Length: 96
Image 1 (cartoon, rainbow, N blue to C red):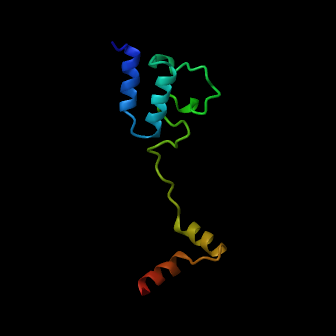
Image 2: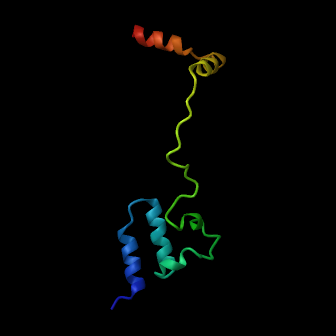
Image 3: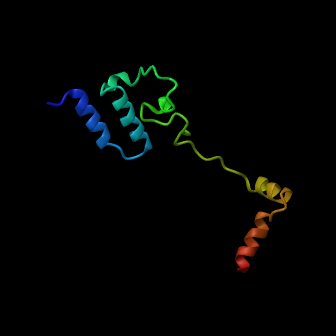
């Protein structure tokens, strides 16, 4: 007879599809199948502690709009670095 904890471990292992779900499955096993204890995990020295909730806390926020870079600032950056200006790049592309 399987216990609810054994079923929780099996369920988490079946859901492994990427590194974060693999970490989550590890945490479920570490806590003996008690999923509710993962939030209050006392093992702060574990290298996976920050990822225990199945999320990457260091990932950039998604949905932020990209910053629009003006072409004049690109030209200035390229001319300082010795690269081609945007006008010169476009002229080279047209010639090719």
